[in-house]
Length: 97
Image (cartoon, rainbow, N blue to C red; front, side):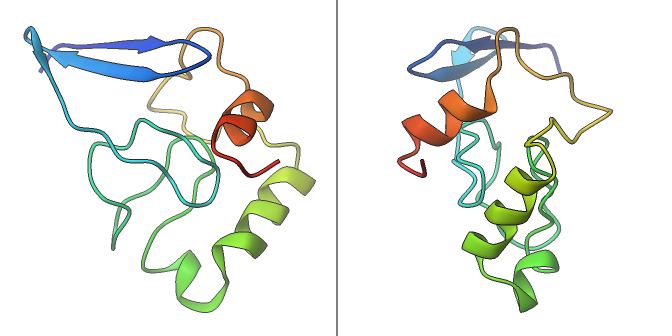
């Protein structure tokens, strides 16, 4: 399906064929563009957390710390980071900085 990802400092919105879609926020990196709730087998394209696996033994806080310590880089090679994406703004807007 065709998707247009719109990123701004305050919000992220996805439009599919002209319809606005419900999005979810990653509890690790605060990426607000997850298409499903962060549950098993979903991998966040921003921080790379695989829910149900990575967070089975580590807390979201520890995973966030590790992501930040490794440079807070965009993880996905299949999904391009949104234009103007900034991990520090993302974390600040999510209340994690």
